Length: 417
Image 1 (tube, one colour):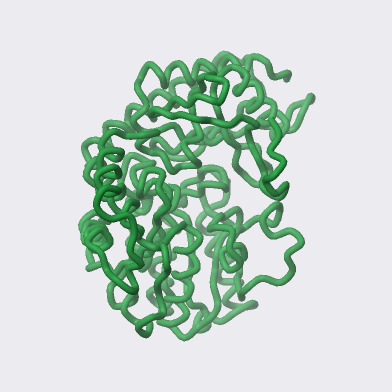
Image 2: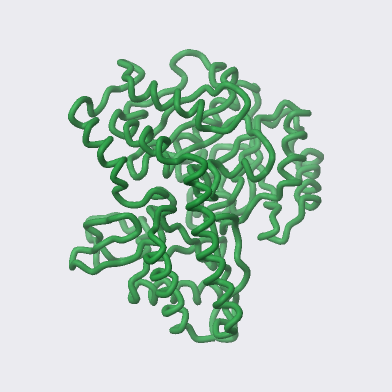
């Protein structure tokens, strides 16, 4: 399928155009059905068209579609930030601002960090992804395709290796790299913040080492550096918990929220310690569409649905299904390109290794095409685009989940070792 009026700079993963979705199933313009394991790149943890979200959105459209909150507040925005104060599992009162996108939340977090600390330095991680706007781009730990050809980006930003059992990099190695940055590149007294994903998304679904997370929290406290956790992809139930940082035993100072916060409507948020969020002068934060009333109605419904018991049940069921299928594929020894499984809970990736016939990235590209032909839509991740990331809705029916995993196996059969 060709898209002649769309900028060719937009990378289209699957050349199909969908017209309808229901939970984990979508249909294209010809009426063909697919099982969607992309989920809007982590936006649809509750699936396409969750009935409670649809009902809330329809009711809101009948009463108020939008008000620019900075000019004229509306109850939806106020209700969402009140609910976030209850929903985000931290011990301190939250200050909140709603945004249109995760990248916008990222940009505003840097404004808060600079304003609070009076510093400019930022530390991020290799293989990170925090958005596509200019300051967010510089945080990303990967040049192609995001930063290539753009020249100097807002900084200064310093990158560390991401410590994880999934990356093979230890806490000690990353801490040594941080010490080197402080000794050679920038003094800790000039660093405003550290931005990190508890579980990397674009980087290949890799869980941050909890030992490192605790050490990093202590270092930030020692030097007055803000710790910012990017929960845009790992948050709102993806791992079986509300947020990924709960797996690490830490509390961040600021948290970036987005994607599944409103089940497909454009909404994101920057939340954090109230004294930090209140530190900038009045008018420093805001946006015309930020906190749209219809998106806020969707977010309230999402938080009503995402109770801990349900998230745990969905996460455990999905983790069991994915891990069982992966173990069966590995044990069969039919697919030598299959490497390690990454991630935690229902946020899982599968590494594709090089073989004599093709690189891991080539194997995965072939799998994506074969999967689409079979009827399942999949997505890559990782620096070499060789990590399959699985993002089916948490609410996927067991029989649909089993069917989707079966179609992946069918597609794997087409790959040549």
